[in-house]
Length: 531
Image 1 (cartoon, rainbow, N blue to C red):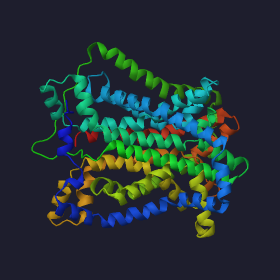
Image 2 (image 1 turned 45 degrees about the horizontal axis):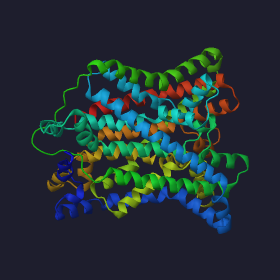
Image 3 (image 1 turned 180 degrees about the vertical axis):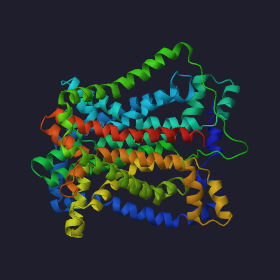
Image 4 (image 1 turned 45 degrees about the vertical axis):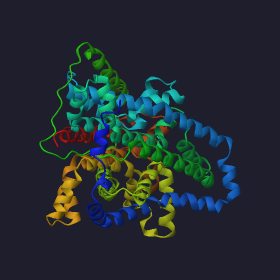
């Protein structure tokens, strides 16, 4: 039997399904946004240009000898296994948790939703720090997979839960009326409508797995990123490190191609008479205890272990660990950089998010790839590219806050783009067309109609970027002005000296300062369900 979701694909096509005159007008209205998106894409190509220049300067023979060697093959296998072992169970876990909290009568649903979002407040390397504190023997692929799932599953839970809240149950009712059972309705109707959220979140997680450094160093699992940083720290071997960065870029492009093929081109906005209603929650019955056990075990592993570890080290450190003035200074600097960087990054991705939904084309796909690939690069590669540019071309910008914010914007473009794109996809294009027909300029229609409807996604994008900046390490170490300290850099300095007691206050403040952002994410998730 043909999937019951097929009529949805026929009825809810993306912008190219509009009549030709309206489509031409829509794309013409997007020309200024396209120009801005191209400028951002050119900026995002700076790190890739840096890698290419180093490769050209090194010579073909050197490139071949550095890329086609046993060590690179070993790192490629490790990275591939990490992606394959982490992404599928993370998708299943996130969809299961989102379904239980959004579609069933699970007791304490709001609490479990918050507990599923809160692991974002715990930096990935703090997860690793917590686990090796309670289980010093943890290392290798198994440990990397477990900690990665616990650290990154909220990136999938958030968009899936948000999409579940906004789905109109009319199609599900129609499928049930045609004799489909609950499992058939889920796999043939609901799951296809979650495709954009699932694959967007999976792409974000996959990119983080490529670029993560601190988590895998602590549990002694080698990836391209750990090897790149080790090369720069031990021997400052630029050519070898940059060739591995080039392999990382190719890996990211493969992920982008897979995500684009999987997500399709369907629209997910509803336009018609009436309003979508919320589906009545399903009764769990005997499945209530297993559902509670699943949520409880994930909360214990992702939050309980870090809470226990931090509490233990804080208790051992006592009040003395807080008396240094570096703690307050690092907190203030971290909050200021997080707010400024998140604001800049969110504004920069608005044109690309709009184009990817409203005016898909070959050029748009190329520009979107530029926004995504840079998220797979380790912070050290982005930082070195900006250092080279500023030293050779714009020396006054070397080691300034502006350069550091530019690095943050480049590194966290994918976070902001994924969060904002899904919300714009759910804002009906017909409303934007109506605003322009009533005399609004394209920019005014975007600002007054689309972005208002997409406000939950914009807020979520801001929060996700701010969370990333709060815990960013390598680029901050290399690009921040002299004397600048953040919570992440101070934490890393203490753990590098195996002084876990002194590191605990910085880890605790990173978590504490990130909690309001997770509350914002949860609030926007609830708000999206009422739109």
